[in-house]
Length: 135
Image (cartoon, rainbow, N blue to C red):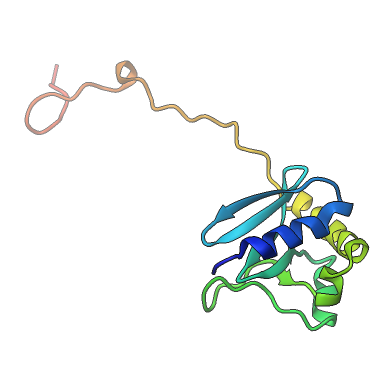
């Protein structure tokens, strides 16, 4: 699960047509962000782009494979053909579908706050049995 500094530098340079990308090392790999969207990752010096129902067929048609961090667990990130990685314009074009997939799968953070009931509003238990005293 290692990512070499050389490959990381190469890939970030290849994304230059998109504009600035940000990388973050995580779990032995690297996450790649554009405009705060997590749209790509690198694992074992292999680039993966995010997929959804709209762009996944393109990856399948090209004979690419999904990211599988461990046996039996497949994620919506697929390998990228080497000829696409080597061509900045082609990589930018393929990445647009991945950015759209990242945009569709992004959920806003939950703002719901559930507070515990106040101690004053709970009935008071007394005695060993926890029952209310009879009146």
